[in-house]
Image 1 (cartoon, rainbow, N blue to C red):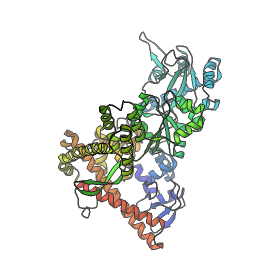
Image 2 (cartoon, rainbow, N blue to C red):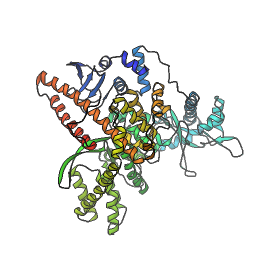
Image 3 (tube, one colour):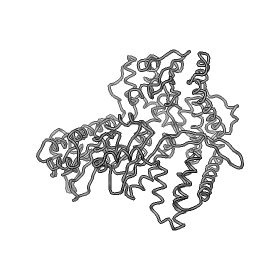
Image 4 (cartoon, one colour):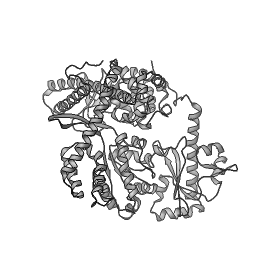
Length: 630
């Protein structure tokens, strides 16, 4: 028996959950006000027989005892395992015993080294005469002493080896300083300080560890900003400046503001917008969004307003499409004269853009007029409004060819608008700006969507038979879950498909945790380092799973196999949800009739039935003939 199974066997989810919420007996189950969102009627249920929980209200989330503690306590899986093991009286190592202990020890050592370097630079800034000019610069930029201390800003001396001498004097080796990117190797031998005569910005990960450093000159004589190079602790594509101090406010406000630079974050936090982080001048990445989407679905982009900045913002839409979780909504379709409702996946997020004048940045706007910044954030444009305004403003619209190019550039965005009234509004807005007939845009959009449907139908038809043969034997929940996880782990091109999967689809705790880590890391290259050692054996079994040669040889077949796995997992989850909901409906009806809660459950049941019918349609089954998976 694994440690995870032993914890589950010894602890009762009812007892653990009751430490956080006032559970009330409801038939065989228990209910309470959801601890994860504000509500007046209880929609949070605990199921003792399955040792699971689910919120049937705004959250829509659920899981096992581990998922509950992780969400309630804000813990990662390893921390939750130790927390629950302690409750259960199960002895665990004080920290994960990674197989590659030397590599883990080196990483910890580099974190400590970065912390020592940040403290050294901070001391120079706040306590020495050498930091006087830098202190004056920060004062001129409007930063308070408290902000300087909170973010541990520093200053590097205008010398070649001061940091080198200080840190080696503290017991760190030159090889370690090289590995951390704090020094640079000379061609003729020896090393010298990377950061000289610059303001220093410690860049912390979400746990608050100094992963790397950013640095800014006080004049314009050199490149304005430099950062730590890629190191075992620092990857610019998977970190956000200020995330350690912003994470609580992001959850509290249910919104994150993304800016570009260090000063933008510092000023934002000082003036009260503590839910602000910076991409540090790079385009947004999937890994950065994977960090943010755990805390909020509401994102405001406040990037540079120049032409390059606007284009970078537009390009970010593709990253959002890949990284953000999806939800399925019923969409009315009319094809070949037949009307139907089709379950369509859309991004489960609200992406907006704060638009300000070119030449300005958030730091300047906030310092000069905080009320203006408040208005810009509150009135941020929807992404589609921003895209229309940007694309129509960058070309001469009297040219017919330019009009066509603008329409073509916006068709992918328009095709993802599923609400008819919204789509009509935006079509007409674009038509008015281009001075063309709205029907011309509607025709172009219909043509684009038809082409997309044909390509998708052809892809599905070519490999449907092979896919069905491969996955038809996956009747057991464990086999299906693990086949799906093994596919994701073995084939990197399938990693974006994690956006279509919810942890709730997986009943096995290990599979849930692996899915979350794949979503966070954007792949499996470093997944073993990021998971708790208790899951290593399970990971190894998935990595060694064999697939039919046809899977290895065909990209399309891999995608189709993943399609089928996702549909089957979703079907199984919805069936389980329907079963639980039927029990609750019976119980509520017997105890008092059509309460507001009962009506809400009935409405959700109708929606889930639509989801199931949609899944059966995709799989070519009769809705009444689907075999229930064990």
